[in-house]
Image (tube, rainbow, N blue to C red; front, side):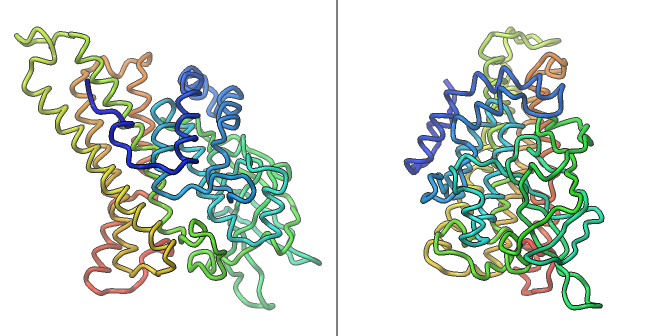
Amino acid sequence: MHPSIDAERTALSDPARTAVAAVQEIAPVLRRAADAAERESRLTPEAEQALRTAGLFRLGAPERFGGHELSPADSLDVLAEVALACPSSSWVVMVSYVAQQIAASFGERARQDLWGEGPDVALCGVFGSTGAVSEPIEGGLLVSGSWSWASGCHHADWAMLGVPLPGEQGSTPERGLALIPASALAVRRTWDMAGMRGTGSDTLVAEEVFVPYHRLRRFADVVRGNGLPEEPLYRIPPGSMTLVSAGPLLGTAQAVLQLTLETVESGKPMAMSLHARLADSPSVQASLAEAATLIDSARLHLTRSAAFVGAAAASGTTPTLVERARVRMDAGHASVSLRQAVQALLTVSGAGSFSATRTIQRHWRDLETAARHPTLDPGLAKEMYGRALAGDERPVSPMV
């Protein structure tokens, strides 16, 4: 026997337990569709429908609209559970959850637009843009531009996109976020990566799309949390929510550990050695212990920070710069630990792990690709945390 996520899981809220049970029920569908998702560079219709039916696109929607309104700590468990079956599916769900968490702060009219007809609304989001422009007209802006790396855009009902907010004539436009229905956007196929192929992170294109003012927010207000609603989840600044990005990686590494243990327990011999079984080799035993502990370390750091930001939001306190930077550090440290764990496990499984027919190599490529996301950059996290510890308050990133 080996440790399971269920055994390590802390107490979950009722909505989170419901979501985890739903994920376990659809896991065979996600596993079955994962290879096709990789070939097609997007989730299959079967996988998308399974995620939607399981309620995984309501994780960040407000409770009063029928959503789960999950805390960051609960979301980590749900996302890890999805990644056990399909890392790309988990990433798409994660992006939707984070976008919902920000979108709920736009105000009541925007909430009605998104969830007035039900909570199962998938979102995608891109903060940056390529040549986006906006023109003020009566009641809002006309927005044009393109937005790359839009994970889950093929399945999203709405997109949250970075746009310039024109100010007074002659002034530099301010950075903002816009909520736009996916039906008003085109998708340009640009996603062709070594890993996380199933996320379908293609490019969204807008041609003079009207966005009313109630679906626009200044990016600075989002980052600072100005004017956020009373629910604790929606008071958490985006910089702290970035730790949720590690949830898919956590489940992916756990899946690699489980696959490796199955290989070891099968009695496979150790090539070019006198060990009749991999399980008899002290080096294999040491690698398994190291990998399991690295995964545990990642989980402990992530859950520590997730619990902290959730508690701070619930109490209405504002974390210090050091505390916020530590959250980013925990996420960066977790990504490094999970990559190291999977490297050790691939060595145990041997060169056969890299066969195109093996699930384990797809998980490895998915994790290595996702770990390069800027929200999980360990170098930037160290810079943020080190500066904060040294009392240097000069900004390194707006997302802290």
